[in-house]
Amino acid sequence: MSNPIVLKNVRIIDPSRNLDEVGTIIAENGVILAAGGEAQNQGAPEGAVIRDCTGLVATPGLVDARVHVGEPGGEHRETIASASRAAAAGGVTSIIMMPDTDPIIDDIALVEFVKKTARDTAAVNVYPAAAITKGLAGEEMTEIGLLMQAGAVAFTDAHSSVHDTQVLRRIMTYAREFGAVISCETRDKYLGANGVMHEGLFASWLGLSGIPREAELIPLERDLRIAQLTRGRYHAAMISVPESVEAIERARSRGAKVTCGISINNLALNENDIGEYRTFFKLYPPLRPEDDRVAMADALASGAIDIIVSSHDPQDVDTKRLPFGEAEDGAIGLETMLAAALRLHHGGQVSLMRLIDAMSTRPAQIFGLAAGTLKPGAAADITLIDLDEPWLVAKDMLLSRSKNTPFEDARFSGRAVATYVSGKLVHAL
Image (cartoon, rainbow, N blue to C red; front, side, top):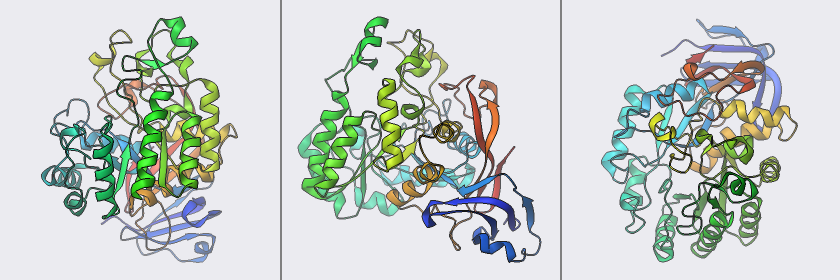
């Protein structure tokens, strides 16, 4: 067990208590003893490591609810251990790992494998998500109840969609009995099937096949109706256009139990960043026009969008150094999610409280994780942030095994300077 810690003179932002004040955080035996202004008058536990944090911000450890990892089967791209180190460097203390591994996480043995490997090798908390359907094939439902008992915190077919409406209805009806969250990416199987970027003038100028916004919206509208019909818990994993926000708000007004997330890429980048066929910007959802990016930031600020995810998706250099239309989708993001999100704060688009809520408290609430709070008695998962620390993203400094970041050579203001998991320092600059 690590020594007790005392973080003094720190600005504490804890969305779970709507708290934003300068104070002290005291943690011992991996648990928060006190966090707030009143803690400044408490004595330090014996043997405590005391840090003066003047000018820094302490938040609940960040929670990233959509992380793709290569292990098992693709360890050359990313292992659970390497993903956890990248997470710690980005201030992320808990990750939800997607099931699109090899073999796919669709049975109890694979859930147990992820949990054991994480216990043995990971620097942060790793929670497995299990597949909705066996083999991600969209046909046969997995054993949702047993997988939940084994430790799966969510159910998703990762980048695949369940196209059979009757199968999805059965899944959501069954999942409702366990309170399970069904998390889906919405992408139409046929509309824009050959598309490689957002459909519009820029795609035409580049001579690339486009993906219309309707490819996201049409399956989303279907899923929302199924969620209303079954009264199940549905999470739209990554939306990217304002029409999707409007559809979700309408579904909520009808009583559907719906939450949603957005990739940091769709908040920090737009289609123009693709430039002249830059494949590290080939993503799904595709990067949208600037007007869409601004509208999505506004929806995040209002709370219409619940959470931000990194959509961390490591890819081989060989799969990215190809013509744009042939390159794989995806980008790493664990180490840059916080810094990219802070651009919205520095630009006055989204409050710091709402950003931290979207990257910590709210995802923990949605997926039932023991995280996202600095309340006394909670696990001492803490992210210490310097809001103004300037830094440059250099490929050789990234801890992920893959280096496919869209932010290479980007200049940021703000980053995690220390990360604690259960009171243990797992990252420090």
